[in-house]
Image (cartoon, rainbow, N blue to C red; front, side, top):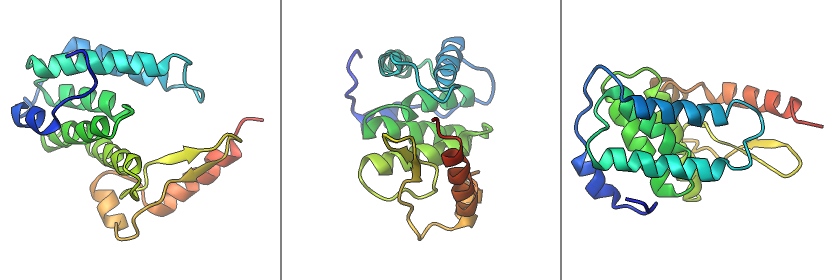
Length: 178
């Protein structure tokens, strides 16, 4: 599929349960490229196009049954978590949740981050407090957080406490470029 629009419920129904071992080398490559694009404080100018190309390639792997292991689901989740449509983030959440259910390390946090990003894109408060937004002056704020979510729930999803999120925010604002 060369488009970024897809039938999320239909796609989710067709996803298999993740296998415990191994990883698709192409998915690992896409994951590593995605992470390398985000290593520096500044994103590369063409990151949106590169992200789009990765999403299209990963969607093709999903549709052809080549996403099979917990690591594959985690790698694919990260690609979609960085998407620009709410549906991308929702798919990222679902893929990360499957990886987490299969025991993949880091997948619980990724599921929470994808959920928060999906909620943010929908204009709703995030649950866990993983999403920060910047302004044109280089200052950061923690996107609105649902006060009903507890630190116990955050810890269950491998997310730091809300107090830790605010500590990180203070550090981010101290490090802003001149």
